Length: 156
Image 1 (cartoon, helix red, strand yellow):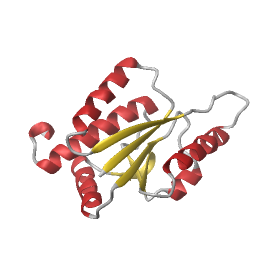
Image 2 (cartoon, rainbow, N blue to C red; image 1 turned 90 degrees about the vertical axis):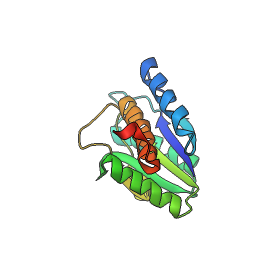
Image 3 (cartoon, rainbow, N blue to C red; image 1 turned 45 degrees about the horizontal axis):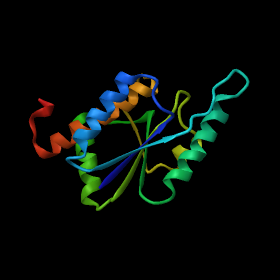
């Protein structure tokens, strides 16, 4: 299975980027991982958030195409604990899913069209987090989920 992580824009925090890279390097022992950055829209007072989300959503859909399993990470999604995420990933693997696209939106979230096209909408928490921090939390939880699946001690 290959997991495509799609992030809107680059993070402004070198420490967060470094931590993401560290977990991605660990993840490659379990599956192939690719990070894709799409251009974020400039957010200004004259542009509605909906327009920003729609433009970014179109870029994401163009990148992801119609193949694979599209998962949106959004606070309105279904919450899983770490074991639940591990079981979810295990079910994708056992169903021979080869391409999984995981989307973390930008500062104003994801478009309605992206949510409509998603196979799953999952949540890291009902709390609101900066999108940069959500990226780090996602890759750490993916790593944790694979270690749970393999019975490795990281989760203890």
